[in-house]
Structure formats: C-alpha cells, structure tokens
Length: 313
Image (cartoon, rainbow, N blue to C red; front, side, top):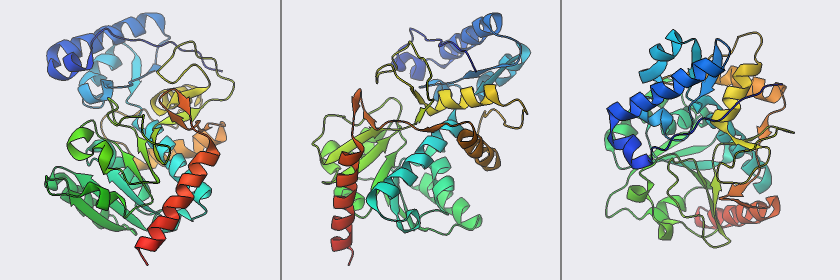
C-alpha cells in the first residue's frame, strides 16, 4: 500500500512558461515543503507542466537530492500508458500491432520517446512537426539503432494538407503543446482517433462521434482512492506520471530508477514489466470528463481500418 498527497500551485501556465526564475523558485518551494512532510528518500512526481519548466526535472534534481527527496518527471509512466493504449486499439480494431501505421504529432522529447518505444512494434511510423531538424534528428537516431518500421516525416507548413497526412494512418498520438500550429479540428479525418497527451491540452474534446480525442497518459490503479479531481472525475484512473511515482514507491528492490532528463529505454522496459506485475493497467477511455465506451472505440477503429484499406489498396 502507498499513501501520498497532491501539491498544487496557483501559478498559471502563462507564468510557468514565461518567468523561468520565478517558476524554479516555486518548484523549490514545493520540494522544500515535501521534504518536511515526507519520509527521507520518498518520491515526488512532476505532473502537468512541471517537467517542461524544470528541464524534465534536471533543473531541480540537485536541490531535491540535498533535501532527501527523489523526483521523477513521470515520462516513463506516461509512455507505458501510451504503449498500453496502442496495444488496446490494435486489439479492438482486429489488426495486429505489427501491421499498424501510427502518426506522432510533435517531435519534441516525448515525441522522440514514444517513437523509440513503437518503432520496432509497428509497420509504419509517421512524424509530424513544424521543425525539420527535430524530425531529422529523431529519424537518424531510430535508423542508427536499427529501427524496423518505415518512417515518414511531414513538416507542417501553410501548404500541408494535414487531413491527407492523417488519413494515411490508423490513429494518431499528440505529444506537443504547440498543436495549434500543427493541427486544427478540421484537419482530423472522419473515423479517426487521436490520443492527446499534450500539456496544456490543445485539441477540442467536443468533436463529432466519429472523431474521438482520448486523454493520453491514463493508468488504472484498482481500488485506489483519490479525493482530487484532475479534470476527469474522481475514480481509480490516474495520469501516468502519478502511476510511475506510485510504482517507484512500491519497488522494494530499488531496481527501478526515477527519471530526470531523458528516458532510459532499459529502465522503461523494467518499469513496463513492473506495472504489469503489480496490476497496473490501461485506464478508462476518457475524453475530458466523459467516458467513451469500448464499443464506440471499436466501431470507429474498424471504420478507420476499412477506410484505410480502401485508400491504400
């Protein structure tokens, strides 16, 4: 059993992203408070925008260590939830994951991470960003490490038809807070699902029934009790970053490592297995505070597969 608390700040996203010195002071204040109420070497997970504004935890790692607090940016837990979701959508669609074509919207750190996780599990990986150098850098790394999936890169410009780009894939994963520069609601084709893990979330949840935006990063901790509403109700669903903090707290072997900075793929694989060992599984299908039924997901995915096959004969 693990117990914990949620620390929140009155700082709005605009301030967090624009005033670096004040933001880091606020982060240190949170760590200082945590050190006073937690046992030594307890874990503190960074959620929402905090990984972004602390260089994925690296900017406050030394300060945390001095106060005997172990921080983790939660990116491994988030990746596991996205990996779980890809496998579940494959199951619901009736198409083997190795035959899937998935497009990643955003080529930043999380885009690179999920690309590393999926590139040897699927048939084709699409990468979309407004920055050509980011796309090239990810592709070069994946090729160097012996990728098996075909890789297609798309630079979003004024002339890019994003609807046509997305139509080439079974579903998309959005991992950028700059989504408005890359994707608009009218760009999403019919019978298409996007898993949105952008922070702050930027794709409207109020789309038509056959265009579904699912919350990214959900893990279910069965029988857990949460008295804080993260925006999707109070139940046993938690964000992947919180699930990672929970898992690290339960790891008595101390074999799993907290993540600051970049994700270590070896640590990712160990934590993936640990999640399964302790019964952590994919959370409910949520779009905002609405729950989407598995049957609805199944129908949209099967329609997408049918459309995709017709267009790619």
